Image (cartoon, rainbow, N blue to C red):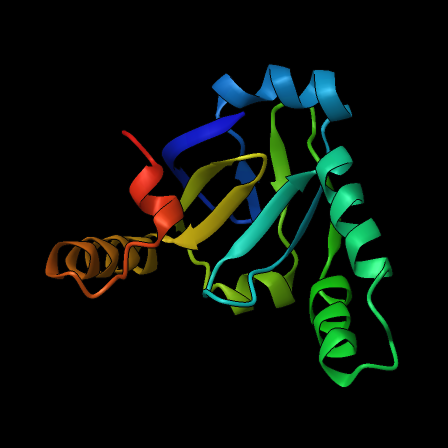
Length: 152
């Protein structure tokens, strides 16, 4: 399980380095094989260990290509999916279209989301967090029954 936020950098060869604390698990679970795609709701990327991605692919495969909304979702998510393999130093190459979607430059945030990571431009992540906290504190976010049952 991946949690927490790590400030990392995009190097001159357009690679990110996965923090050491995650590498052993990733090499054990998926031999460092991962898939990166766009997030359809935010200007960030989603990075999945291959076994997790394969579950997503099965769900996408079950959508109808005859339904325009479902086909669009398949096109965007699958069309942007890129296989990434971590090298022995924990580095992953992020391709141009993916970097462009998330406006990635040198300073990047890797955000653990239990079964996947999000990859954000650092200032976009900070803005997302400030907006999210503000919405929660102001009551703008409606607390559903599921959220009310969540005890932290």
